[in-house]
Amino acid sequence: MSYAAAYSLYNYRFADPDVGDTEYSNLRLIRAFEHGLDPSSSEAGFVLTHVDMVKHSSGLVKGATELIDAVAADAGQGAVIDAFDLLLDTMKVVEESMESMWSHSKPKDYLSYRTFIFGITNQSMFPDGVIYEGENDGTHVFFRGESGANDSMIPLLDGLLQIPMPANPLTEILKDFRSYRPKPHRDFLATVREQAGNVGVREYSCRDLQSRVRYLKLLDHVRSFRWRHWLFARE
Amino acid sequence: MSPYLTSDLTPMEGEQFAHQLHHVAPNLTTDPMVLPSSLDPFTVTTSTGFLPLRTPIVNLPPTFDALTKLLENMPITKQDGSPGLLAHYELGPLIDDGALPDLLTELDGLVASDGKPDFAAITAAFRDYAFLASAYLLEPCWERWSKGLEGYGLGRLVLPRCIAGPLVKTAKM
Image (cartoon, rainbow over all chains, first blue to last red; front, side, top):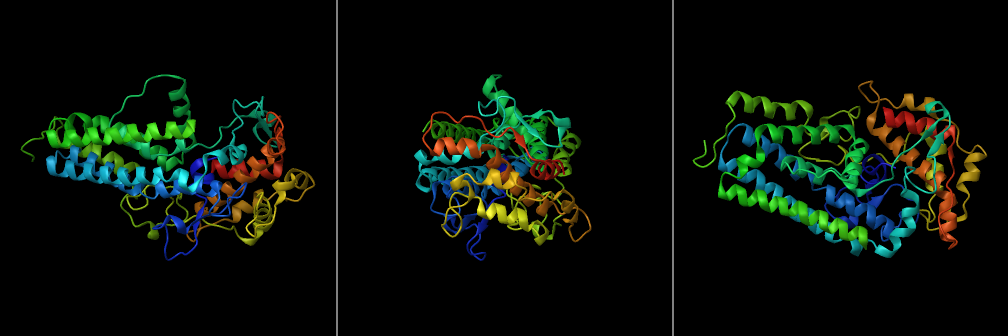
């Protein structure tokens, strides 16, 4: 099950098209397994909170592009600070939206609808994966299930801020997640990481106090986002 | 030029590096409403970010009615509040009895106004087949879970051609 192209980011509609995504209460699911067609259900809340967070991602894409452009053009403090401020304002609202997760969705209900989003890799229910009739010469195939960790927002900031990743079993899975993203997301993230390195976003930002403070604040958003997601997973 | 910040890059290097990003995402600053539906709906722009260019397509054309109907009848609680196929573990048997025709060739009919494959519709088909595939494979596990039995047991280990074919085709497009 794919997070972006199926379960979450291609699975929402508006109760009132004129209101659009400006209000969370206007969001509805298109497809559901359990009680998700009822917008007050935990399944709907779980999926639609992801949509509500990602609706702000335009600020991250714009900010990341402007920051790389500004550093590349040696545009100086003002342009760099403007780009950082857009990124910081956006992450503030993304994290506020994330905080609303458990008011839209009860943690205890997760185990129920989760039954339908397991993958067919390393799961006891599919010890040898699954045979797709008529495909793959009749051999077993293995795919992962859906996870919000397939989302592209935090990996965008990882790349932009040039955050190095340790090599461990968890980061191996995160690397494998890349292949589950839509191709335009994958290409954009790879190029941001590459060009942030080429132009030296981190080094450039840290040469001046005003931009250094903002670099660190944005880094702190990545940290608090990941920490909250970790707590969610434990709940 | 900033009084504080200076770059080690030559202006030509800087321009070249910045160009790469706009080269990989050529529609970055384009208004998504003028972009054709033959583009990948997850094309990245500064106004839609990582969301699709337009709100996801809800229902496919009538040639896919058999698929749409199954998905509407599938949830444990349907839109009208009544119990659906998964509530009584009826989805798998229904599909095994041939309730879903193989619509593989119908996917070729999903064409955008510019004559190219309609990626917005193809992604909606992928979504629908992905939901159906997960529900079909995991329905036995749901049955054990909902009856309070220990462990999930085994899922269905073979995905039938009428789901596997279109799922793989839409995933690869």
